[in-house]
Structures are given as structure tokens and as C-alpha cells.
Amino acid sequence: MKISTRFLLFILSLIFIGVSIILILLPFERVYFLSAKNISYLIESIKGNYIYSTIGLVVFLIGLLVFYNSIKRSKDNNINYIKKMTDLGEIKISSETIIGLVQHVSSKFSGLNNIKVTIDILEGQLYIYVKGEVNPEINITEISNTLQGKIKEHIEKCTGVNIMEIKVIITNVSTPNRNIE
Image 1 (cartoon, rainbow, N blue to C red):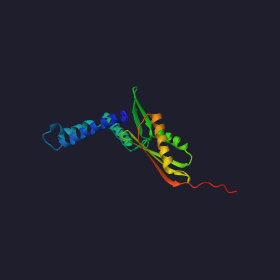
Image 2 (image 1 turned 90 degrees about the vertical axis):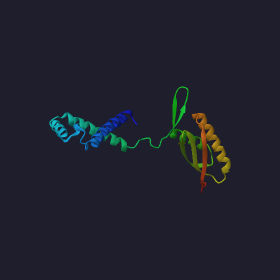
Image 3 (image 1 turned 135 degrees about the horizontal axis):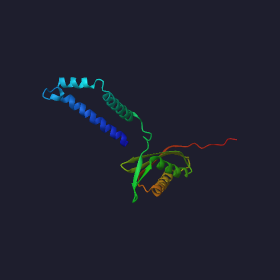
Image 4 (image 1 turned 30 degrees about the vertical axis):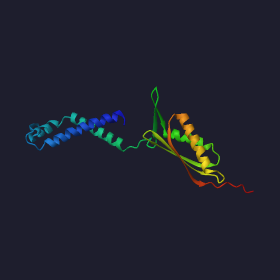
């Protein structure tokens, strides 16, 4: 959340707290500044004083801005980041970057088709899921183990991030394309 939005929320919360305190104390007759006579005097003094209209307009605009920020969708809702601390500061690597690196490694394997990569970043831990199809003549266990090793090696070399788990899910056997002449 932006600092300006936080500031507006702070101001709006102070206004709500003030109004709620007045509403809580209003029924008690011991609070003399909130008597009906004082409130009617205050309302009479507000008439013709446009400063109060300006204050009301500002509060209304703050309310609209806070309402808009509460319902708008963030552009990067589906993008998570994995954070890595170095001696010079923080590095944030997006989930899209890691997916691209995994797809790059997977594309070098012949016999694997229709590869789909998803990742989960849970509490700074990286979990990679690779779904795809294999050609009928491929040894699934062997290619899966090799793929997991290559992905782990490439991701850790490029990003320095430790991978907790790589799941390879083979969904189907690809049908070979036949050339009929």
C-alpha cells in the first residue's frame, strides 16, 4: 500500500474516531459541550461559512479515494517474489522469471512436449511443478530425474535460491506425427 493511501486512511480513521466519540457521549446530559443548545448554536454558526463545505468536500474525496483503492485490482496479483539478501541489499526475483528459466531448461529435452510450469513460493521456499507429455519411446523415470537435476542446477546457479521440491507430472503420452505420402 502506498504511503499516500496510508496517510489518507490515517486521517479518515481519526475522523471516524472523533465522530464515534461524539455519538457515544451525546446521550449523556453531563457533557455540556454536546448539549442540544450548543449543537444548535454550532449548526447556526456553520450556516453561510463555506470553510466547512470545503472540509466536507475534502473528507468526501478522501473517502472516495480510499474506497477506490479498496476495490481496484492490483496489476501484479499473480506475481510473487522470492527475496534473497546479499551483502549489498535485497534482490527480488519474480515468479515469472523462475518459470521462464524452468521452461528454458525443459525446452532442451527432446521427447518432452506441451510443458507447463507453475511455481509456489511459500515462506521464502520455492516449489516447482512441471507438467507435460512424453513421447512413447521415452523412459519416464529417467527423463524426470534428469529434468529435475538440470532444473535444480540451473535455477540455483542463476538465482542462488534453494529449491525445496521439483515435481514432474507426466499427464499423457504424445502421439507421434506421421508423415503420410
